[in-house]
Image 1 (cartoon, one colour):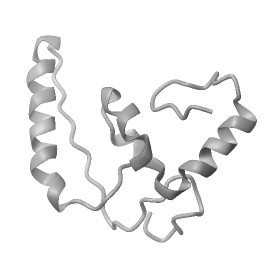
Image 2 (cartoon, rainbow, N blue to C red; image 1 turned 45 degrees about the vertical axis):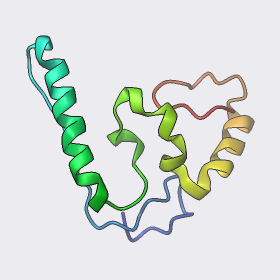
Image 3 (cartoon, one colour; image 1 turned 60 degrees about the horizontal axis):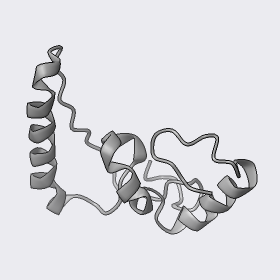
Length: 100
């Protein structure tokens, strides 16, 4: 990912050579809260050492709206313009939505 220019795609966060995904999985839904807490605490402990920005598919569902700017960085205005042109009614609004 670091070989692609930051303005070549919508996702500008390309300075890292590696990416880490924190995933907590358990077949018992009763453990969801414990796993969510563990994942957030693990993230909080590592975050001070991480590069700036975020990749959208690495966010938890409830994190997305507040962190849209981190996903697209300087490319956000350009991606909003594309959204306005091709999806003005916001039909494609699932996951981490870009409001047209």
